[in-house]
Length: 154
Image (tube, helix red, strand yellow):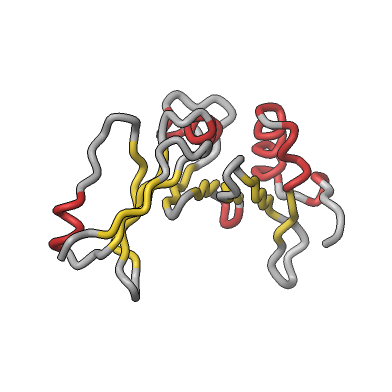
């Protein structure tokens, strides 16, 4: 669909879009509609680029909110008044863009071995993933402050 029209969103997506665009009005330009064949209502997809070019994906597909960045993704149920960051997709997004959290992932040449959120000052579990067969760990942060690509010793 060519133009983003909030009126075509399902109710949960519409409610979340209102909150998201109150928080980041500049992200409206990255909003797109997602729609399953034969379904009248749409969900929200936002692909917002970080200053380093890494993409933050926010989608409301499947009656949940998924936030993905740097190889890690997290699912949320939507409430207009969440109490904790683990239940608050806007708070989670804010923690990403303010670099209070960032994403780490481990992989080898053929598959991923895991992805997880990290906070500044936390240590990467290099040895654990190297023992599991991972050959590389990557870290991605919104501004690039914590970005890292590291080969693991075998």
